[in-house]
Image (cartoon, rainbow, N blue to C red; front, side):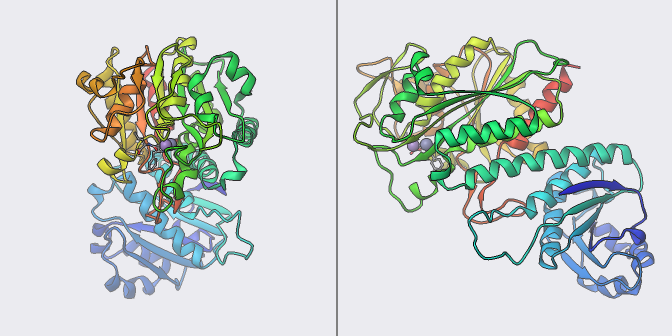
Length: 497
Ligand code: BES
Ligand code: MN
Ligand code: ZN
């Protein structure tokens, strides 16, 4: 989708559909500017729209060049958030889709929000709301996505342009992540996933090195290899790298993504319905890291960023790892495996201890790690935790704030030392499960044993995959984490100015 910014007047914008977000104040004031632009049809329509969030009305204007005008409500002006704008733009996208609009305009409404942020949110809402995954459909879908999006503004056009660009870049990156999550598991074996990463790297301008099984063995990644033992397909470990000359950090920020391309549970087999049936999404953390690297590279962020993606499936093959087995991890620590379904932490632990070799400034991991995170927070927000290394409070606050700004929201959970009790093994340094209570926290506590640098963990098991579309989030993979990481890194770079 081409995205541009125009300062042409509303009545002169030549598009198939013009989306006009309207506040309740704007409606109460009589929508005079819209009556002037589009004629008395707006006056007659006034009775049917209050301007509340969720309101939407398609008009066929008497005057002006736009073929259709869609009024979408954003509620009270002072209350309108970026999320309100995303959802309003998505409502407009749905109308534009049903009339097969090729060109679409959206006007930036009067709110208390900054012009660049507002424009970014409108582009995101429209592009993400227009997303469809139709790779496997053999019949033509009735609706085609728009080809061209014009953001219309009367002032601050430079800021608006910057925001619209950011919105386009990040939305394309989210689509990459959604596509990977939605992909059928047989098309994303670890080797195929690494090929997809190479393609993404080439397209966006970052570097990637892929380790094969032999290299993974040489490096001693016992956790990744143990999980892979029940599989037909060898594991991969991908190292993604964005190191611009103008980087503001000399030691990297590292992003780690869980790449379990399919999680059957292994010998501790999952039931199918409502459990294993969505486990193609168990590489959503990896997808988020790939998307974030794309966005970071395309926007030429002045930060040295590395992505690490351990990838395997988790299957109950003949030689699969078994409960009771003790695994020697990359770090040298030993882990007693008491449930083969707690595989994510096994592969992440190896990636996290390997990350130390870069002397990172900060490491962030994203993982569909625990069903307990879904029980605690549902699918609207991810759980986040950090270790006690210096600056932990600021670090967590920065992540929460990036969540608020980006719409990929996160909620903190405690990391009290007492939780370590639940991970004590009778034979090894640690066991890989901590029992039913506080499952997301004990998973994070497990990972903490493999880090010795500032670290943030984000458990995205809930919001990474939806059974039903919601606002600008499509059914299936949501690309959760791409916007979160991109925003976090942007803020991080900004602080280093
Ligand atoms: N991939 C799952 C977690 C998951 C559950 C993600 C639901 C998305 C939706 C993970 O590998 C897993 O199986 N975790 C176990 C851990 C348990 C055995 C300690 C779980 O949450 O049940
Ligand atoms: Mn599992
Ligand atoms: Zn898993």
